[in-house]
Image 1 (cartoon, protein in one colour):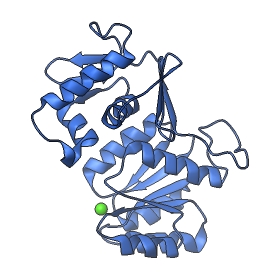
Image 2 (tube, rainbow, N blue to C red; image 1 turned 90 degrees about the horizontal axis):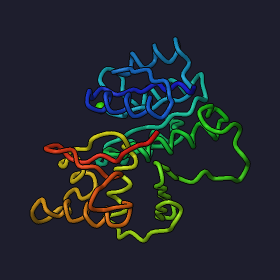
Image 3 (cartoon, protein in one colour; image 1 turned 60 degrees about the horizontal axis):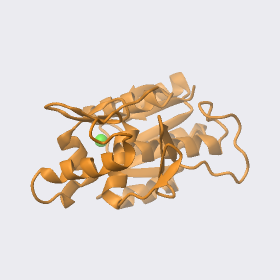
Image 4 (cartoon, rainbow, N blue to C red; image 1 turned 90 degrees about the vertical axis):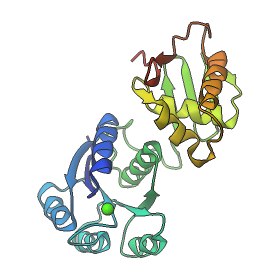
Length: 237
Ligand code: CA
């Protein structure tokens, strides 16, 4: 199991990252400032460091430079959109990759796996990497399969065409299969600022999606309504 040191001072990110990364099979250690990060790095020798740039006590940049003095552990830096310069400098002082807040869990996990794979450290996957083989970003839940790279969806093995928002909606539900997603969370993630009009837009998209993925759309068994809360994609696993 790959161990990840998450250096992050914002509690909401800490919680989401811990749940999300553990769900993906990683072991997670948390440091809430730069000094703690360096202590924990020395004590626990993680396989990868996910490093926020904006940190109290010692900045992410300094943490990155300090770790690089003694280790070539993969480091992924996390920066706010407004601080592109930090990102550039971060890469210059030895970070492997970066993500910009706000990011999606799936994107982050893909980058973590890629960084670990480059160092042959990904022990959560299918063994040693094959040279030249790039793992596709694919998720399968029951009879549903989504390929985020080719933007294709297969329902019980049959390719189904989905318009952009229906694809994004299904992608978000599949990433969180088995979990109830609140309406507001779905709207924020799939539409964000694009969301116009009344809340019926979501219902309309749910209905259209059901027509394509359900065996009997009038009695949904895959995309389930959770009354008063939101929706859940049923996960048979
Ligand atoms: Ca921060």
